[in-house]
Image (cartoon, rainbow, N blue to C red; front, top):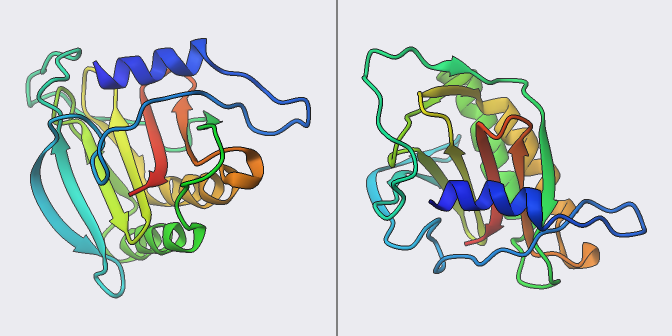
Length: 190
């Protein structure tokens, strides 16, 4: 339900300021360090050159909007797909963009040392969460089958959203929703 609601909110509540800033949308955030109410972490590891970025595969048991599909379903590659960025008003409480850069750089490090792609399952186990200090970013698969995405693309989104959805833009984080709403990546305070 969370992923569907986020995408629906992105369509319904978007507004663009007269200054040409990024669109904004109001959204209620779950408790600090979580991406959904009742979040259960299935696994945890650390990535990056200094192994200082926490990565979790998370499930949202209360989110039953996407049914599971057979494991034999090959993931679809969504690297390079476009998305629309939205900022969360009001101003204040956003992540430190420098902390978000640590996550973005860890993704690039892993892209060069592990491989450029990562796979996100479908169903309720559809969320990858990354956290460093004040910055929390997560990637959610809203597709009914697994998807593959590029670490470098997620890194670029983090580097764009973090400094462009701050108090000076009357925001405190934001997200980018795929044009076809297959996935979204979000950046906010941890």
